[in-house]
Length: 95
Image 1 (cartoon, rainbow, N blue to C red):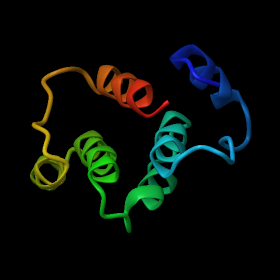
Image 2 (cartoon, rainbow, N blue to C red):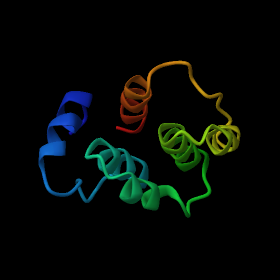
Image 3 (cartoon, helix red, strand yellow):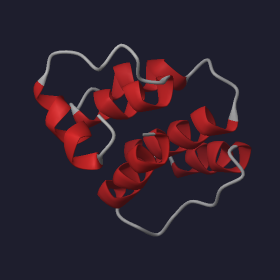
């Protein structure tokens, strides 16, 4: 699965692909509406990619102060795009 469309189709399954990175698993759980499982995938990771997904999740949660902290750790700036657009951009980045 290497396209956004295929990733979105995989949301019909009961679990993410086992070979996916923690970032993609997090985005998969978020796509399924399970913020807690999405957050658990990246919460203990310290690299920039995980921080970027972590930032998105806190932005989605509405905790903008915390989101901005994680965007800074990821060396990113909170986007002005919609949450859906950011989710899709993140999925494409990590596929």
